[in-house]
Image 1: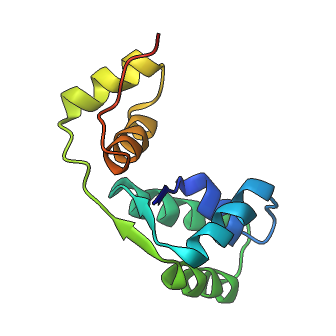
Image 2: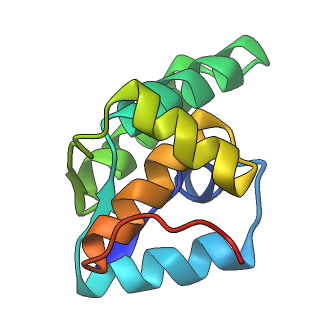
Amino acid sequence: MLVVDTSVVAAWLLPDENSASAAKAMVHLAGEPGIVPPLFRYEIANAILSARRRGMTEAVAARMMDRLDRLRLEVRDDGQAPARLSEVAALHDLSVFDAAYLARRSDAAGRGPRARG
């Protein structure tokens, strides 16, 4: 299963974005569901709100939400305590938000997040 980052979904949804990696991920999602952490819901809602504040019409935002609803995304709680996510973030020089995606990807692969080196 593919762990999908919000930036990839936003690039696919937003009319002014164009990303080859987003297009590739969306092709993959046509074949099997993607995995996202609970944080995804807030991040994508914020991306759409930001686009609205930059002038996106309500009709375009509604179409984006329709497209989002059709994506095969499975929200999985990573079960990581905030202290653990902070530790993983520090080990990998990530934000805690990105550490949540790393934890999700590692869980999907059957292993925990590992330190570099």
